[in-house]
Length: 385
Image 1 (cartoon, rainbow, N blue to C red):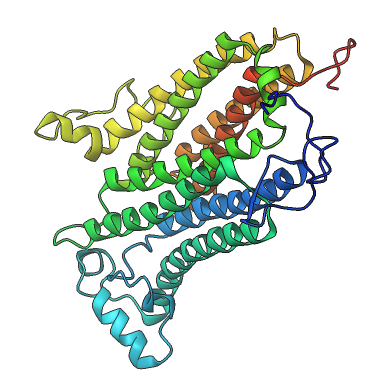
Image 2 (spheres, helix red, strand yellow):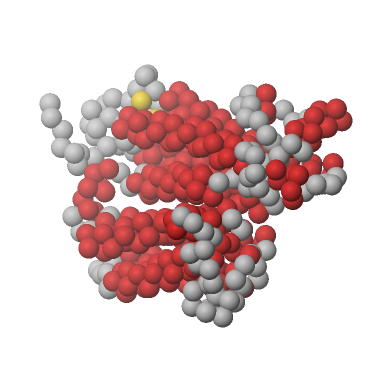
């Protein structure tokens, strides 16, 4: 017998109303029930917090120049840190062969080495912990019958992206271990951070989708504002591009030079903006050029974001208007934080705050985008129902 997609399903996990079928599917796969959605949202919320923390830990690892302190990739044995003085000396000796040590950190003490080692080791262990929580949570949802069938490919895709991210992380570190390299390649750092933000954005979107039953989302979409949704999608893409350029800034420490604002070294453009040959290398290696692009793109994101907010505040739905207001507040705050960060030569605290501000902004843009296309029901007075 065919079923209407809007047929009511008992939130207790029973079958369609009146069928008398009870209990979870013995295969571990669940229908889209309220209980299953709640458990899956909790699972994804834990992953969200862990990925957001990973971005912060990665930022600290970069800001403290700790990323090259471990010169090998050992996915299993690398989980165990040095446990004796001899093991510590072995790690330190390996680091002393790098250009970073020989040209920047020569004479570093063992205590100083341990400081940067623990940041990189912690960064890698947190990545392992995320993978473990993903796997255990996936298994727990299946065993409890709370794994919604339609969501299995999405959860598997998250795990695959996490594994890919680990490989990209080593690909990034390996570039910094090449002779003559003081840091990792900036474009590889941008790739690593970009994938992290992409994973976080997917998790955020999945959590939002699980906030309501699939039939309710289909019904809400009929009242969605497609133009506002499209404009917000454009803002999301621009913001993501800005995150990538920000990673290039971090990769070559471009935020610690040209600390005047709104000018750069007294001019609109920095001096020697195209000094490196061939010209395209300036887009990745010239600190003035990269910071200039980051500034200009920031102005563009801000201006377009204000236009999107003005469109959003015309919505007839109170919660949609509110979501765009919060997005605009965070957008303004992120611009201010960015300016203050560069004017103080990007100290660790401000640099990390700016990076976490980008996380908050992306999440708020995604929430506004979701509500634009799936507006919640509201009473005649305009309050959300």
